[in-house]
Image 1: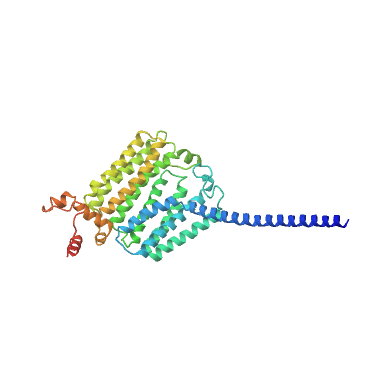
Image 2: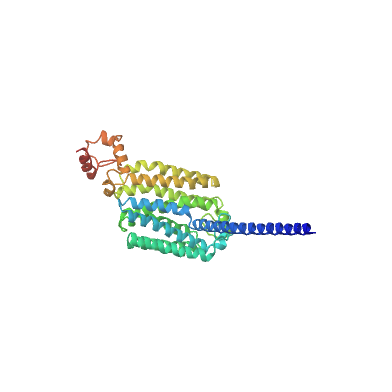
Amino acid sequence: LKRLRAKCVLRRCHKEIKQRSLRHLAKSSSISSGTSLKEETESNKIKAYIELAKPELSALVIMTGTWGFLLTGSSSIVACTSTVGGLVLAAASAASWNQAAEVPYDKIMVRTRTRPLPSGRLTLTEATTFSGVTGAAGVLALLTGTNTVTGTLGFLNIILYGMIYTPMKRKSIYNTHVGAVVGALPVVIGWTGGGGALLDATPAVLFSVMFAWQFPHFMGIAWKYRKDYKAAGYRMISRDDVNGDRTSTWAMTGALALCTVPFVSTAVGMTSSMFLVSSSIPNAGLVYTCYKFRKNTSSRNANKLILIGFIYLTGFLGLMFFHSTSEALRIHYTSLRNILRRVGKSFCVHETQIKKNPIPEMCPTSTSKVEKILDRESTT
């Protein structure tokens, strides 16, 4: 009887120990899963905020803003960082403002229904707070790191995007023209951020390039997603454009306008005459792509127009930078740009064969007064 009682006590003890162990394991597992769930939630929030800021828009802003800054010849790290950083923050503010205002319509469109707000990954309060904070930080960075003109332009661009372009998308097909202004201002902000004068021929040419480029780019997007835009009630140029004639005409208009830029930039002394020759290659490529799109307004050709547009912009801006006649750029003797220019002189007919003739400078690599002095100093 005593042995039987002892066995019962042992069984109860083992059972209790087992139950305690299981409870401990369950508690540890819940704590671990709770921690990992919290970390995953925080990670998803960060990703949602990044998506809200439209990183692809920021990449374009960085490229054009930096291009405008570099053309001034400024070597200030503080001004460069403030200009590019301020532009990125301002672009994030405008993009999040736009999405916060268009939540009901984004839910309808296939291409936008997975965005942070329509999908419920972020609340409207979170988005508007993000827009306000990034906008204030961006304008502050431009004001303190550069100058008042640059900060004011940054602020105006946010307002233009949020208060004019966004509501205009549902009222007029000319919203694209306002959007083109918004897309063209970052390069001017980059120019003034580097110390360039606002009332000058150079920022006007830079603005014209980006303004005209928006039309082939936007027309490709507008045609590709025309059904989505129509379903959501947006009045895009492609809406009710059955054959795509109106859309393709605007795309071609922008491409042809870009063909005139080298003539203007050369006439005002911003670039050398050889820019007329080298820029004809990307210009011909863009015009041909627009022509193909006009002949056959298919989604495939719209995709090609969008892709070629990005390639064109990179090449065209690079050539304009290379052919720039800015004395501020030529002083940086050891820069990659000026090294390439000096290498180019050895292959240039003008420099090697016709140099004795008293004709005007015609080449991107022709020798300016500054380069002559620096060449003389380097040889001695």
